Image (tube, rainbow, N blue to C red; front, side):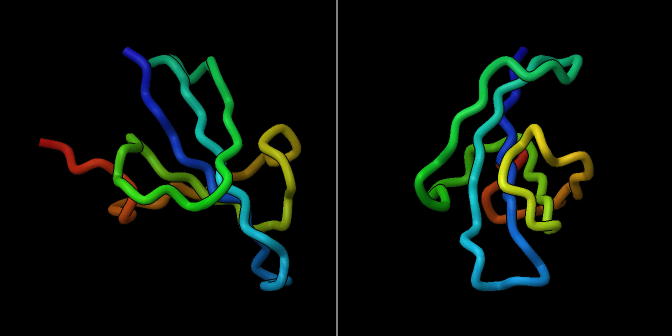
Length: 79
């Protein structure tokens, strides 16, 4: 079963830097299957998890530390 993860790349020191949103699809072991850059913040809650990197990194591959955002507005509600 694959899960979809939203990754938010921001910069806590320079608020003028544009925030990037990535949609990552991975399997149950955590292997990344597909990575897609989103043009804007998604409108609907469709993600299994939401992660954030606020160190000013510009790509998923250059980031090495992420914070999981629990109960984020874009995270799916589990039944």
